[in-house]
Image (tube, rainbow, N blue to C red; front, side, top):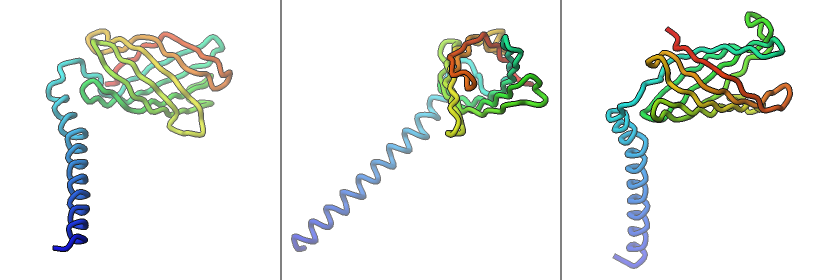
Length: 160
């Protein structure tokens, strides 16, 4: 073999080895570790559909529906918020993506607009209560109408 062939063979084998190691790390990180966490996780299961309602001092109402997916301690999903004086004819419908964690019977969630043209943010700290039938805590959000930061007590019920 010539020197050029040795260099080309070394570069190709190095690139293939790097690609193999990268794909192996992805396999472990995205499939094997989540699978292992799922089978060893012994905490509360909050996956499913949850509902809540809020009413503010101005008479505006909000109906929430949250779809949670859980992988061990990690939680993700979508929340739909319907707002208005009459919830059958809502003024605003907003969809937010959520991510968070479950730890020792408490859930922290961070929510942000699914539509990047709309700036909605919220965060919440909830406690699993009534044997897993309700989630109770505080909901903190940035009001789209007034740009104020607001908070409210919230109680989520698991949808049957």
